[in-house]
Length: 236
Image 1: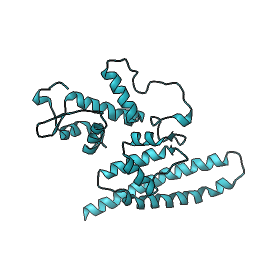
Image 2 (image 1 turned 30 degrees about the vertical axis):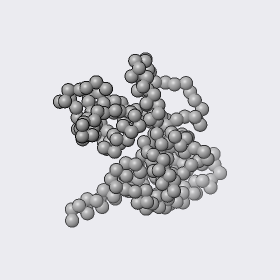
Image 3 (image 1 turned 120 degrees about the vertical axis):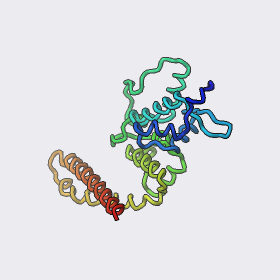
Image 4 (image 1 turned 120 degrees about the horizontal axis):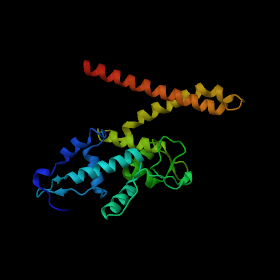
C-alpha cells in the first residue's frame, strides 16, 4: 500500500464515526473481523495501531453495503473486490444473473423468503460469524438445520445474536428469548388451528397469512413493552 499523508490517516474510531450514520450496526469488532478476512488492509503505526485512509473507508462502505443490500457472502464480495483491484470490468452488485434452482441460491437472496436455503458456509459468511458462534447457536437451539441446509430465518437469527454479542450478550443469555418466542409461536398455532381444520379450498394459505399477521403484531407489542419497561427503569 502506498504511503499516505499523515493527516489523511484515521484511527479505527474515526472510521467507526464515519460509517455509523449509514450502517448503525457497525462496530469496532466488525471492522476488525473484515480486516481478518482480508477485505481491508489498513496500515499500521510503529506502535501497532491501525491507520485507515480514505480508500480503506470506501472499501469498508462497499463491503457493508454489499452485505446489507444484496446479502452477498464475504467470499463473493472478496472476489468482486479482487477483480476490481486487477482492473477488470465487473458488473455492478445486484445485476441480474441467470436464474438458478432455489436449492442453490446463495446468501445474497433475501433472508425473509422462507424458501431460501443456505449452506453452512453461506450462513457463516452472510452473518459475518465464526464457527464457534454458530456451534453455540445450534447447541442452544436458536439455529437449526433443515436437512443439510439452513432456512433463511437462520441468517437473521445469527446476525442478531452477533450484534447482541457486541453488547456483552452470550448465547446462553438468549435462551430466555428463545423460550418466549416458542411460547408465542405455540399461542399463534392455537389461534389459527380452527382455520387449519377447515376443509375449504385455500384454508391452509389463509391460516398461514393469519399467523404471519399475528406474529407481526406480536413483535410490535413486544418491542413496545420492552421500550416502556426500559424507560420506566431509567426514569426511576
